[in-house]
Length: 244
Image 1 (cartoon, one colour):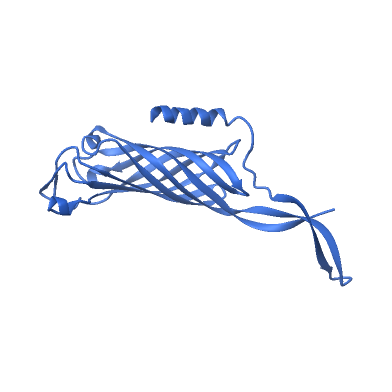
Image 2 (cartoon, helix red, strand yellow; image 1 turned 180 degrees about the horizontal axis):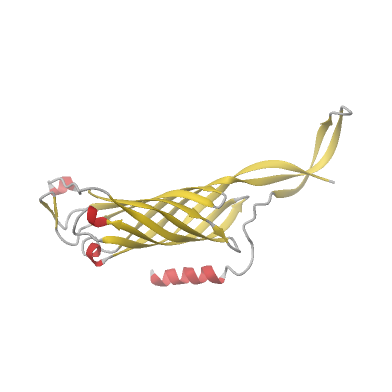
């Protein structure tokens, strides 16, 4: 994982130096169209040549999927262990501003027995840890369709035992835990259609979530590293550009 992360980072920064930049200017076809307008003064139809153009609106959407790795403090690690898991994210963009949410589930077996509601949760239990992130970010566009997006947000985490029938008992953890999160997403975009992109991304962040509010044997905070792909597109409008 560390070697892959280093390779991606080196590739990212060594390729930033040159080439294409994000461009909001209208994109026009090379094909020339012959159009006509009615002259209201002479009441005659006038023909003119024009290019069909597509321009970008500010509103856009991004849908992504990735894999995340989590590094906890020693207290949490002794119960949950450092682990990976899927990362599903959706965000709405308005020009360079982004508001979004991430859904990050994982299932683990406790590394030690836990007391939950005066009952013993065994190591054979299957426990879902579900993280929900809500965040806002700003996209700093660079050369060669790279971008850096610092973000701030809020994380909500919960634990739920999913094999209670097998264990023969029910277990309910106290409540959700929440905390602030911050980090940056590094993107490399590939334009496959006018103002529509596929992106490869890496994300590095930290959450202050106090997991001890869920169970006293857990600790506070975690680091997160994610890699994945996303699709991002902006709303478009079409018009014709008159040429001489």
